[in-house]
Length: 100
Image 1 (spheres, rainbow, N blue to C red):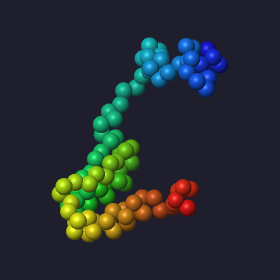
Image 2: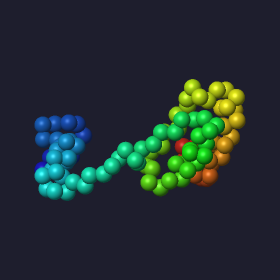
Image 3: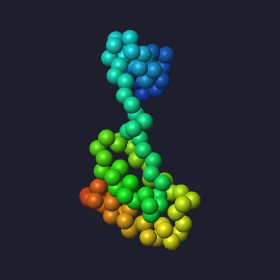
Image 4: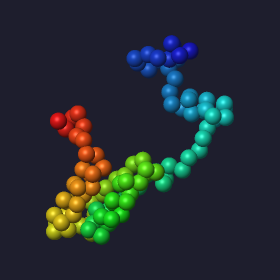
């Protein structure tokens, strides 16, 4: 079945993620998790920089969205930008291959 389903293009015998989801449910290999706490959003504002720092280094958060907001005007942005850059450089000190 695996050899038939591993094709370059979708065919009638191809398996998709729904098949594997229901397979895990039927074989009792399903482990529910609370993904809401793993995904966080921080509104970019000068008052939220401490929150950004704590959430950026929290190992339980898998996805963090740093979102601009109407609370952050241009002057606040100019003030917050070096702090945000410093936090990200502390979190990821080495450049990735596409940044070189």
